[in-house]
Amino acid sequence: MSVLGIDEITYAVQAEDLGTCYRFFVDWGLKLVQESARMLRFECLNGCRVNVAALDSPGLPPGIEEGPTLREVVWGVSDEAQLMRYAHALAQQPGFSDTVVDGVRRIGCQDPNGLTIRLQVTLKKDVQLATAVMNTWNSRERVNQPAPFYDRATPIEVGHVVFFVADVEACEAFYREHLGFAASDRYPGRGAFLRCAPEGGHHDLFLLQLPSGKRGINHVAFTVRDIHEVFGGGLHFSRCGWETQLGPGRHPVSSAYFWYFKNPAGGLIEYYADEDQLTGEWQPREFEPGPTVFAEWAVDGGLDGHTRRQKNVVGPEGKFLSEKK
Image 1 (cartoon, rainbow, N blue to C red):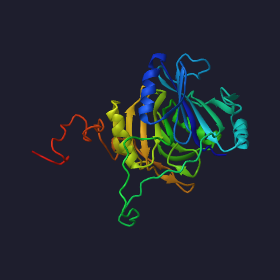
Image 2: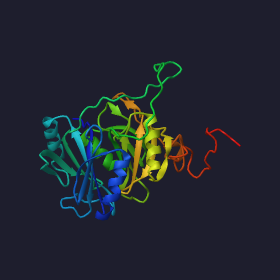
Image 3: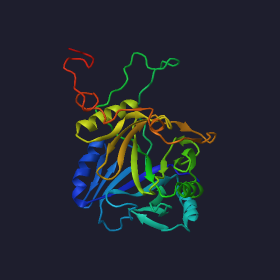
């Protein structure tokens, strides 16, 4: 059995905050495909869905924390036969369900952290996109061709989700034993990076245990084409007035470039690109949590979308950033 990735996520917010969330996710680069007084539905380029529902919407799964947060993660599988295998694997789990939503069969339960998860035959589609070609000392593939620039980001999909959990070992065991996830790396006793299948990106799910035992959403990460789209998307989002939490920067554990922003729907939101690709031969590593393990480098407060400089720094007065009086 193997999960293909995230097909859909659902946030819950106060009804009066739906307007703010509408602007936020449109500025983020998602396409609005459905709207009502109680719910917004957006799609990424490959059809991965992002729902934002009012907190009092009927049928909304319970939250693992108070306030705006992520209520549900729907994982995609390849076909009906795979879905049936997961139905048998999860049948004895708390909150097990076998339902049809918008004409699509979903198998679901609650994970050990109380989060509602579901599986369905994937609705995502393959997309072919032009991406940057990098020139290195050993390989000069981009010749007579400038690298791309992006005036905003258009996320391809929800690439991974990160949760604070009360018991990281129990949660890791659940996803590995019942859903077939593979361990990529760990903070022993504190965190687990998991990928859906032995071959794939560094992580689709990161579980983080705090000393307080807090449960909740840390962030949702959206995959973009390349490092240039991380920068272009982040600069555009900054120009729109949304607040950076940290970034741009680079993670040592997954090698990915990132930019995090504060999210009115709960937790943080991330653009990222260029994560490590792993196979079944990969051996999980162990790390001690720390600032330099989280980020090899990062810009605190982000870059200003107008000056292209770090925020709260005096902007340039000449025609070039390096120009001095």
